[in-house]
Image: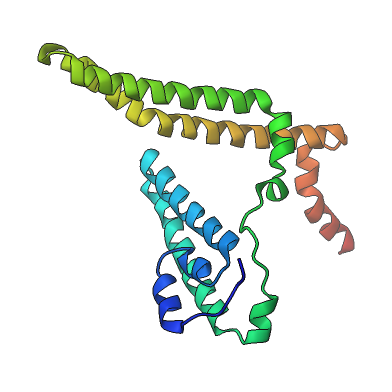
Length: 195
């Protein structure tokens, strides 16, 4: 789609929705990227019961708003030079293909856990609708466990990644044969020798 400067008022109105202003001017890749990022942030915040994640929505909204209005304020020559590209190219940013190949078992475990979570919640909802009142507590318990399970699993995953990062640093320092204590003390030792 050809990019084109459009009415400033409508651009302003469209820029109030993340990604819509860019799409209105023809920057479909950028607009779709911003919309997806904004929607995924809301989905993660709601599904993980972590309202603090929603703070990123504010940043994404302001970025999208000012980006669209900045594009609209460019002169025709500068506007024509702006390239329509996806906001995040995951394969370039984090090497997603290499990551999946290297950690395919962990990715598979994660997908299995997500599938179990979906089945658990669906079963709990089914039991809630089918079971008579005396057995309703079982369905409610299953629903509560399934409701908080994603947050618990993400928390465990973050802790695991942090531990792996710490262990990875220790392994790197062990490979080059320098104890971690000496690496930390090196700047202070060199400062003493100069005096």
